[in-house]
Image (cartoon, rainbow, N blue to C red; front, side, top):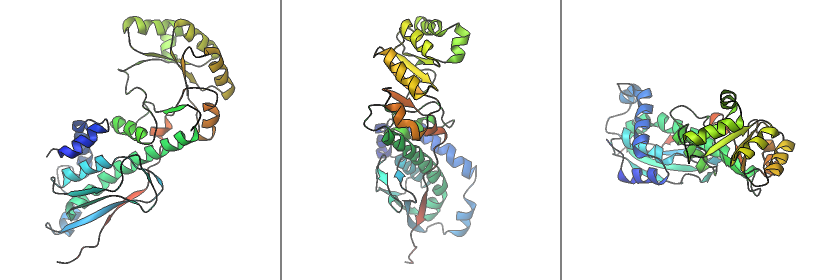
Length: 297
């Protein structure tokens, strides 16, 4: 089956491709079902037993992934499900909050449970982690960015969860922007040489330059770079980089950032903090699916 028009519209409005999400959900379900069935549910639950379940937060955080849960439920139930979302993605939730309720055949609910929770808990964990970073730099003018340090196959969803948490996405992949890193510098013979090579090969594309030292900051700006990544620099070095650039380029702090020093880094005047931990190290937000008591008759 295909997803409902309403779910497709919700996914598209969130910047997600409904076709991609549908395929992702099918792959995730196949991990559980293979070419067979949910043997436990088939053996223990009458085929025509109807029921309802609530998806409940077991910890405080930020919710992300509710339209994806809807997609899982629609596919498993063959579109025979009534779904009520009690929150929208990006909302804060407290332990005990019901975020979504569903009614359909109990077999379908139990079959969908783990796949739906795997996605919901992970994406909500990313959103929750992002919100902590966003809150840490609030009022400084600095913006929290994600990176390409994502789970293979889940980049689009993880970057969506970053947006739900109040962060901003950087480039999606290697194809939508140039980024000169240390290995490119070695291969090209210098920062300026690498920067110019990208501009000559792909005119009009944005080129960002990673700088490990203040001298590289000077070299990159002199070559015309408008976006600098200051990698693993101290707060003092970042402040000096901001002073030297004097508004001629956007500055992103990256590498070695921790939540406890995020505000100090932001207060140096950098424009962005890019944080790989938003996606590669975010703990899942604890959530569960509670089947409501089954009433006879």
